[in-house]
Length: 281
Ligand code: SAM
Image (tube, rainbow, N blue to C red; front, side, top):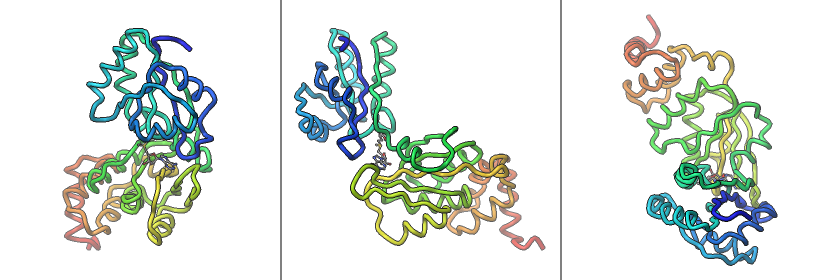
């Protein structure tokens, strides 16, 4: 194992057997392990009988802790970065540390392994030749819809992370903004209650609405058809967004403009026209 090297080590997303031999070996050899949550990671390290100095590295101490970790690396120490689950830096802290290490020519070595988005994609049956991983959608509905609208013209499968308590709302928005595409909710991957809920956006939304969703989920959305990839007609999009009934004309226009690729003012005047004359009389 090389000195003065930053190792980015993937850890399991549930099933502890999903750690690699190489990850276990390097975790046991480094001088320091930087973990998102030291108490959480201690369970994993104890399981593999790894006992090494641990330090925390999470969203709110990144700047200050990043400097300390860089100092250790500058002094020739080897450091492993791990997160609570899966691959560090993927919707997890780490990228700033990697960026700063790279800027100082400190070697950065990935130790690949589990990643929830990739695991879900691999078992999805959706096209994987091209996909977009877009992390967590915004938690507020207006922003989430605008975010989804911006994704509507992308080719390939779309992969999102979502918190279980927001899943239903996000599925609603997927249906409203992206239309009736194939959707997969991959839940609790590698764990006891692992399941993949498959169907159209409405079918998956209905299945999900029938129970309480617990645990962790990845949402996969099939690519749109050629029409939607070339931007859906403004009027179709406006009708769909207006049917929701909960959005202001301004928000509808904002989202429709992104989805249809027209200006906000055009979307706004068309939305007003449809509102005042829904039957086009
Ligand atoms: N770095 C991680 C990775 O490589 O997948 C992701 C960390 S992110 C903070 C946590 C999110 O990943 C969860 O909210 C969920 O969307 C997804 N996730 C993590 N583990 C999962 C699992 N076992 N099954 C389904 N989704 C999971």
